[in-house]
Image (cartoon, rainbow, N blue to C red; front, side):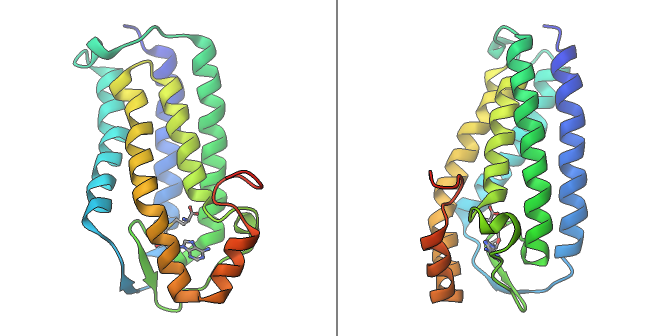
Length: 194
Ligand code: SAH
């Protein structure tokens, strides 16, 4: 199948995603880790996330290996997906900016870790995870292939639900009443909703 439109939308997104991540990760990595709370299920999920964000879409777009999983390309779906990808990228940038050096890939607490409750974190507790939901759903619409596009929603869903409770428990143990008060006045992903 011809994937010109999907490629034109997805490839600039993928490059921009890693430019944003690379820029902020290089800053955050300067601050040493104090407590490592990572766990193996999370690390396995992160590996599958990378595969479904990079390898599988590239295979769907540039090879015929996943053609059996193609569905009909629709410009309307791709346009909707492009909007989700752009929105996700914007929220991704803003949350990286507001979280600063407190960011990490796996669950960690840094030296001098501060509880961020300002900027976008004043509205919701997990804006970066909201960004990844938006980007994953966007990818599912932009790449008309069940494995190269939609699979990431499932993989991200597993990572999100396996991690979220542990992350909040870690933060509550570290920051005590400050975090529980923050939890009681904010939602995880969408203000007033969820
Ligand atoms: N869940 C957040 C952050 C993702 S990065 C989001 O979706 O925006 C994961 C790391 O961020 C965790 O290891 C934790 O140390 C840190 N973290 C999460 N919430 C934080 C907050 N409100 N303030 C400071 N650090 C936070």
